[in-house]
Length: 331
Image 1 (tube, rainbow, N blue to C red):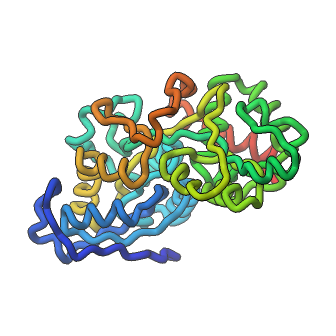
Image 2 (image 1 turned 135 degrees about the vertical axis):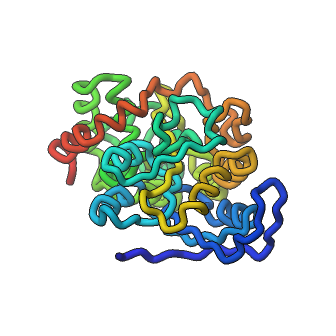
C-alpha cells in the first residue's frame, strides 16, 4: 500500500481544554487530510490529548479512489476534510465506520450524515483568485461573476481543478446545476472550457499558479487560509456576485481503523469547542455550529449569496454528474 505518512509531533502535552492525556503518550493516529494548515491543527490535538498524528495530504477524490481500490483495507484511521460528496460515496460503499459523536448534537442535520458515517466540520466557500498584474499586462477586465468567465478574452487564462479529484471543483458544478438547472449549467461549462487550457489534478494548483502569475484566474476554494496565502501577492479574491457555491468539509472514521478509540477521540475533539476554535484559527472557514463566530477574515462575505445547495443531492448525483463532465469536457 503506497501510503507515505508525514509525522506531526509536539512535546508539549498540555491538557488545557482537551481530553485526558493519561495513557495516550504512545498512541499514534493515521489521518488522510484535505485541509489547510493541518500541521498546526494536529499539533494542538496532540497537545490536548497526547495522541500523536501521522498524516498524508491528499484530495478527497483521490482518497475515495484509493479506498475503493483497496476495499477491506482502511486507507488510514481518520478522513479529515475534503468535499462531502466523496464521503457520501464512501459511506455508500461501506468504507466508513458509523460513529455519532456527542459533540455533533448541535450541528444541523443539513451538515451531517443521519447514521453517523461523517459529520461536517465547516463550510467551504468557493470563488476566484485573480492576479491583478496579469490582468493589467494583458488588459483583461476583473471578473466579478461566473457569467464573466466565458468571455473569450480569458482564453487560456483560467484554471479549474479536475472535479474527479477535487471535491471543491465538483461542489461548484453540482451547486451550479442545483441553482441553474442541468441544461444551462452544461452549456455554461462547455463555454467556460474554451478558456481553460487544462484541469489540474489538485485543488491547490490553480490558486498557487494565480498567486505566482502563471495564470490570470483560478477557480478555487476561497476560505481564510487561501486569502492569507494571497497576502504579499498582487491578487484579488472574488466571491462571485451571482452566487457562491459551497460544500461541507466533514470528518469520518474508516471502517476497520486500526486505532479506533483514538479515531473517535479525534472526531470528538474536532467537533468540540476547542477543536472548532483550533480549526477556525488555522484554517478559517464558515462554521457549521451556529453559536460560533465567523472568522474575521470572512466577515465581509455576503452569506445571502451562498447558493441554495442540498449537499445530499450533490452526493447522490456525483456519479452521473462526473460521467457527463468526462463525456462532454474532460481533456
